[in-house]
Each structure stands twice: as C-alpha cells, then as structure tokens.
Length: 371
Image (cartoon, rainbow, N blue to C red; front, top):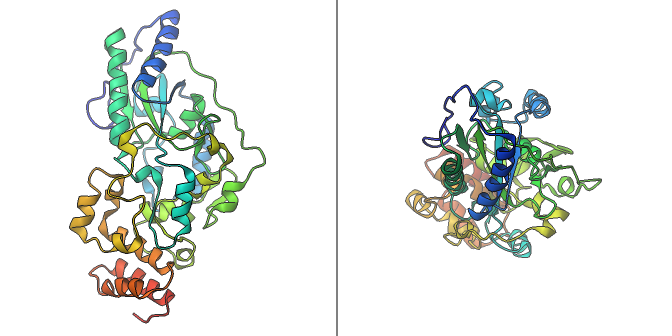
C-alpha cells in the first residue's frame, strides 16, 4: 500500500499497522505538527464512513448534473468507500493548504474590467497537484521514519476520492452552499489532499455548518449553477464549461460568462467567511506568465506553441489550445466593442478547429459583425 507513483491505488496488507491507543494519540498530534512544518495550514483525521455523501452523490448523478464528467460515475462504490479503493484503509489524513495569491479587491478589479482575462486564482501558479502530492509524500515518509513501514496512499484530486466530505469529517471545514469547503478561520481559498492509511488513529470531530440563512453565493452565480443550497449543476457552472466541457458552450450561457476564461471564483468572492482568508505563503502558487493581469487580446494571440510554453507546469495546460481559444472567443464576445477586438476575432475566423470557428462567429455576431 506504500505510495509508489502518482495516485494509482495499490493493494494493502490485510492487517492494520499495530499502534497502541496511547501511541496513536501521540502519533496523531505529531502528524499534525509535522504537517504544519511542511506548509499545510491544517491537518485532520477522519474515519471512512461516507454513507451520507454516497447517497447524495448517487442522487446528484441520477440527475445528470455531472455533465460530461463521466469519470465521476465510474469505479462503483470505491469513491465513497475508501477501504474498497485502497484495501486496508482505516483512516484518512486530510490536509488543506492556502492558495489565495492576492487580496480579493484586486481580483474584483480584474472581473470588473471586460478587457482583462479572468483566470481562477487557484490556477495562476504551479499545478497544485504536484505541490501537494510532494508534501503529502514527505509527510508519509516522516510518519514512516517514526513508526516504521505502514500502509498508505497519497491522493490529490486525481482519483476517485470524496475529498470534500472527508475534509468535513476531519474537521477542516464544512461544505458550503456553493459546494466548496469553508473553514471558519480561513475561508475557502485552499487546496485539499489526503493520505489513506491503515493506522488506527483517533479521529477529529467533524466541522459544523455555519452558512445559516446566507445565500450570497447562490445569488451571485452568473449562470445560476447553484440550483439549490448545497447543489451545483455542473452543466451550468462556468468552471465546468471552461475546463471540463469538451464541446460548444451552450449559447444561452455565453453572454453570462463575462471575461471568465478558465474557472470562476465569484461564489468565493462574495462569501462572508472569506474575510478571514489568508494570503498564501507558497511561492509556487503566485501568478506566473502575467496571467493575473493579462488582457484577452494578448492571450488570444497565443499560437499553440506559445500556449504550451506559457502553461508549462500549470493546471491550465490540460484543457489544450483549442478550448483556450474557445473560452477567450466567448469572453471577447462579451468585451467592449473596439476595432482591436473585431480584428482579433476576424483573424481566427478561419481557424482549423470547427469549435473555435463557431465561438468566433458568435463573438463577431455579438459585436454586430457578420463572419
């Protein structure tokens, strides 16, 4: 069960690593201390009972709210039953790491300028999967150095893992009405990661919901994707549309996407708990390639080689140049009319990709120009 590479599940020994109750309590405290030393803002420990999350996931999938994310329906119950994904798992060590790179007022300025490109703040720096995975492996190695070999697997948002319910069970925060995890001392601008392990560690009390009657996130969503408290219809969500959705963006939603070209942070920006959010201390999460202040026209001008060069080591790269241009074409359609915007769109009107051409035509039409 020891982590060998990436997040691929591996079998565990059938018996748990033997640790006495007193030693387990001391070890749990040490794990939290070591995690903080490695740059995690919080470490919690959860058991493996996700029966409530399993029922909610099943109902959500039955309504097809996952859109084209078919992988969410795969793997049977392994997603909600950790010991079926990684046999031998008794506990999940859940961690969070802050990523907010700048004050929210600066983010709001970008959103308010239709000529600027808005990239979700989690994606401005180095790919978080790599950063957290390396730290989690170091944490597991620290445990191993203390107690000897034990069974574990490291996960960072790339395997069938219910990271948000596990984080709530581990006391890191509650799942808010926008479906992000909220911590009462730190808001929601943080990443999550997990270590599945066969250690019988004491668990932390789960976090309690403090959303109350607030519905700011529901009201602000540009595409009304939060269809009910705690229920997100991914098919309407700008993050889904700009990142996961492979085909044409539904026309009724395009004019509502503003200048978002990769993800959306609107629901986090209005959450009152984010007045407690802290700026990241991780230089890896600071903006690269000027993506925090880039204009739509500058990014739309990138050819594929430039796109690959400027997104090296970034989570953005996985959407590919075609979707990148699709997204920016929509944002340019929502931008203030100008000769420069029209010329940029017309320059892509004969792009080899039908997907790009369709969105360019729509954007030109939005500016009253026949393709």
